[in-house]
Amino acid sequence: MKISSLGETGILKQLIPGAFNLYLDKNLLYSWDQYFEIIKQLSYLRLVTLTGNKFIKLSPDYLADKNIN
Image 1 (tube, rainbow, N blue to C red):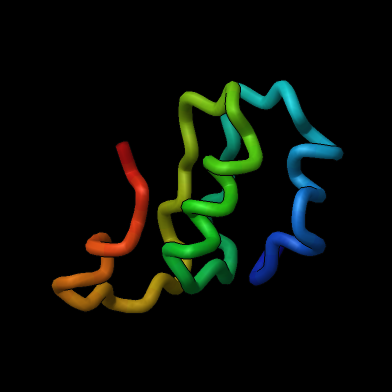
Image 2 (tube, rainbow, N blue to C red):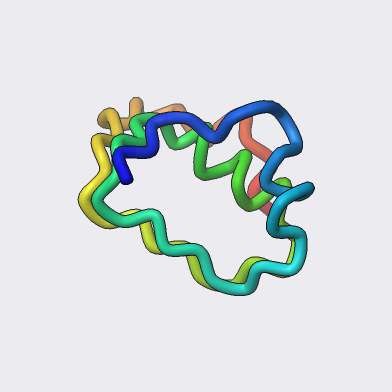
């Protein structure tokens, strides 16, 4: 589908609030911040498939300021 953006803030929670699985493989997502936004909006999410996207290489300290607990 060539998705490269998540859209407006909060749109995923509005459109698919009860999603358990999300398959976004072979799209144009590029930032791991997009991944963190997906899991932040979808509290029931258990599986996210992102294979084949265009994610940029992470710097060694990327996760230092992320609240991933």
